Length: 379
Image (cartoon, rainbow, N blue to C red; front, side, top):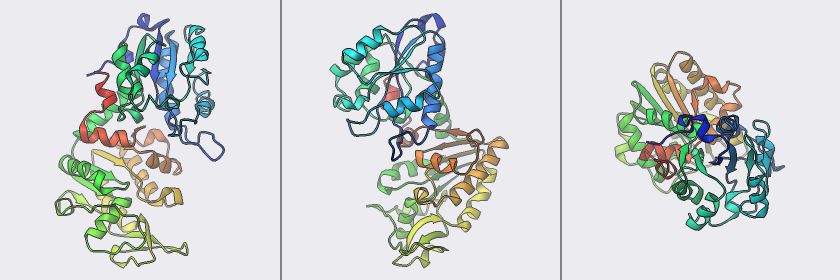
């Protein structure tokens, strides 16, 4: 198990140059500005913690997949939470000068790690160059912890290393999600059944019920012999083992949209060639509500429908049920950027929804494997 930064005596961090690998891969709007501040708020806790203890905090992060993207919009979002200085440089003279000029409590944000291709190549020489900037390493990028990249797995080997507060909380909650309190209920959405099948089998073994939704449900309908029209489907279909497992649940009605834009609720067997399944329906909510209302632990990753096209009502309906369950003392863990973004539109306060994970793919991989490259590197 790793040590987290709150276990370090204050005097051991004061005046130290601490490299914090943060997860600031943030969504941008059409104007190039950050459109969702969820990860900013969560990651800022570690930066403030170290700054308030007199550390010299050097923030490393990546954004997007284009190496030309910069952390400038990240800086404009982060300033709402943490006073800092942004340097549009990573390993050049400008970055080194800024590091040398730091005072105790300063926070410095450097440029997009992926501007250098050696980051994704997990290049050890690149990691050594990054390590020369600091004296300690704090891993706090849970959303990227499933990537074996230089700043995630090679860099911590070169410096005394600790987990940040965000990463600590993520692992604490997801460890509980792997062995949930009973009765338990899991909801899994998304697409690509072939990649989700191992996790589905794992969840069927550890949860009392697993409800599959989103595009994954289309594959279930197809395997059951129902038409799916223009709906998104995967390369593979669920096996009989999954379909007939006593813990497995699938939607019993859908919202289908015709090519003219009109949408209707119908049974899966009534889907027509011109239909695209865009969400579940009210009968499916009725199916899972009794299970949710008695569950002591609920795990959820993936909205029920195409939230980006405005199909959010049933996702919101589940969110309202879960808010009541949290109030009643149940444990709820929700992950996936789309899920959280869709729930924000519901107006339900974040603190009433249980634990919201900053990871999508990282969360799913941890639930399956019980660890991630970025966590192993800190142990």
